[in-house]
Amino acid sequence: MTFALDIKNFVEKCGKNADQVVDRVVKDVMESIMEMSPVGNPSIWEGWNKGGVSSNQDHWLVNAGFVGEGYVGGHFRANWQLGIGSLPTGMIEGIDKEGKITLSKAYAIIPPHAAGLVYYFGNNLPYAIPLEEGHSKTAPNGMVGLTALRFNDFINKAVAELK
Image (cartoon, rainbow, N blue to C red; front, side):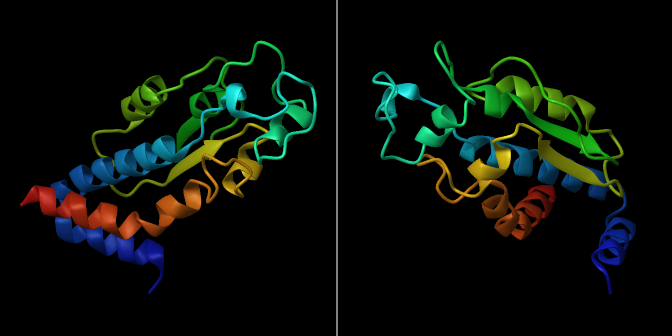
């Protein structure tokens, strides 16, 4: 049986409860990714103010030209996007250090009949993949892969909340 068939069978068995479970799981996944997403802090980057090369992992942001003078962390979190049926495209302007604005935007587009749809979580910034691969000392193990490992826990929690 494929994953898609498993989901279809789950939806048929659960009926209207499936919408509640999917809604909660989508939110839990987004919250997990957001919580683990690093917020750049130039004050901890060695060499930031000296213009030199840092010995810690976050220096690559500076050296690659992703951040510069006047940099304020939170742009990465602001760029997490939820797509329904298709991958999110483009980049978001601005910052969201805590991720609350970004989560609110995602929650607002989850439809009432959430079950049976395909959800995509994306971040299109050019440094999203390096961050996922551990190029930040505040997220050395990434975010998305760790969240994927917790997916079944999110489902079990959402189902348990129905009872």
